[in-house]
Length: 100
Image (cartoon, rainbow, N blue to C red):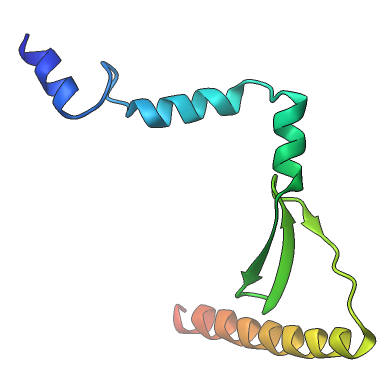
């Protein structure tokens, strides 16, 4: 029928939801097997946080992991982060001031 042609041409089901998204959403709602959880936890990535100016280690599920660094690296990281915190603060204060 005409309605079936529209759905198949758009690669969507009867609810108008893309089947790939529906499967992904469905997968998120069911519990993971132990093997899937352990495999996801093994994935560690380094992500840059532009607001704080820091690189953070994230485990597969989004857990932030502490990174052990030397004292000199720690001081450098804190200097950069403090500078970025100040810049962010000034930006937010300026934006709030301009909107009044």
